[in-house]
Amino acid sequence: MAVDHATARDGFALSDDERSVRDTVRDWAQREVAPGAAQRDEEERYDRSLFERAGELGLTGLPYPEELGGAGMGTFAWVLAIEEIAAADMGMAVSLSVHILSQLCIFGHGSDEQKQRLLPGMTAGRELGAFALTEPEAGSDAASLSLAARRDGDDYLLTGTKIWITNAGEAARYVVFATVDRSKGRAGITAFVVEADTLGFRLGSKERKMGIRGTSAHELVFEEARVPAANLLGEEGDGLKVALSALGAGRISIAGACTGLARSALELATRYALQRRQFGRAIADHAMVQAMLAEMAVGVDAARLLTWRAARLRDAGQPINSASSMAKWYASDVAMRVTTDAVQIYGGAGYSRDNPVERLMRDAKGAQIYEGTNQVHRLIVAQHVLETMRRGG
Ligand SMILES: Cc1cc2nc3c(=O)[nH]c(=O)nc-3n(C[C@H](O)[C@H](O)[C@H](O)COP(=O)(O)OP(=O)(O)OC[C@H]3O[C@@H](n4cnc5c(N)ncnc54)[C@H](O)[C@@H]3O)c2cc1C
Image (cartoon, rainbow, N blue to C red; front, side, top):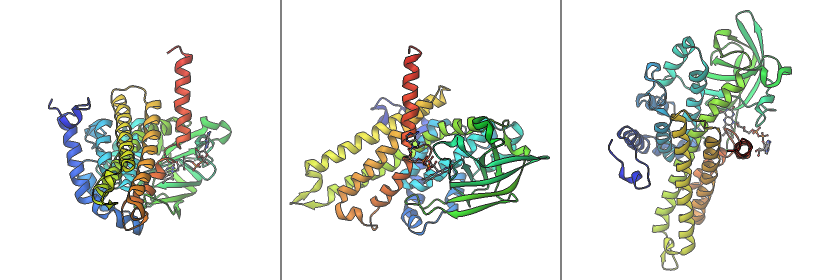
């Protein structure tokens, strides 16, 4: 196995395949994704052709087995790819992360028939996926969701509302969490795959987002939407398990994306600090600017290391619950801090929409909220620490 010296110096060697994924995606993302990112943000426009290009490059199903149209490369290769995409455009990275998340539900819990029917178009980059859990009255407390699913012959009728659904309006299919019996609490939650053209299903209002404005997000409205029982994932009552296991892995992708976003902000700030002069010298020569750059650099590296650890654990079949929460929480906090410091280093120019760093700062904020708020991740990690001690670990 050839060694990548840039990372081997830090004690991590990338295989030839991993290095090739990283370099190919970096090249593509810088050439084709980065140039339009500011305009897509300005116009709040999702560019479907980028998703299709990602499909042609084998990125839209990269972690999934080849027999289902994927590249069979696993989670670690995926985080290398998503870091590069986010370094070019966080919106594109989040949209793809959600696409991967929706496939995780089908891959992890679908029957063979469902996998063969639903996944190949998604892994190939022809059909975009979405993941619909959040409701107006059920956010962090997802188990309290109320979207109702009632059996009607060979179908279920879904009634209720979801909000904040990324990729809505662009997706071909949605993994939707509903309850077959609210009195059962968690045990009533059930996962369905809902095709975009389902009778009784429509888009509601568009979310007017602070950042990642190149992705679409909408409310979803279900009015006795008729979903075939053949599209139920697992059994009735398995829904929370489906959601939580997919999110556990999905968070590693968000952590990788936050690392890429933060890296991009650090690179921009460093370049600006070398070129901007005040008091007769480059601002990079002022110790307080150097301190900011140093803190940004350690944050980016630590975020990447936590992300890589979680990805390696998942690929090794080890438990990832606490590791993926740590990675997502830490990397998104780093992205927020580093992008804020990048704006600071740019000074007034950083506050202007004519420069990229204010967009990166807006893009970072959402990652502290979606796929579990960072408060919820602190709870997950604390629970893990306490349980380990109670078990005598
Ligand atoms: C850009 C973006 C994209 C999104 N995309 C999707 C998507 O594709 N699919 C989807 O289903 N959802 C999506 N969401 C929704 C997201 O998952 C929720 O916003 C998130 O889970 C938080 O829920 P909430 O907004 O209802 O906040 P709440 O749960 O109401 O939380 C409000 C505040 O209270 C805190 N809090 C709540 N409970 C506790 C507790 N027990 N202890 C300590 N603090 C607590 C939270 O941390 C937060 O600070 C998206 C959100 C955003 C912003």
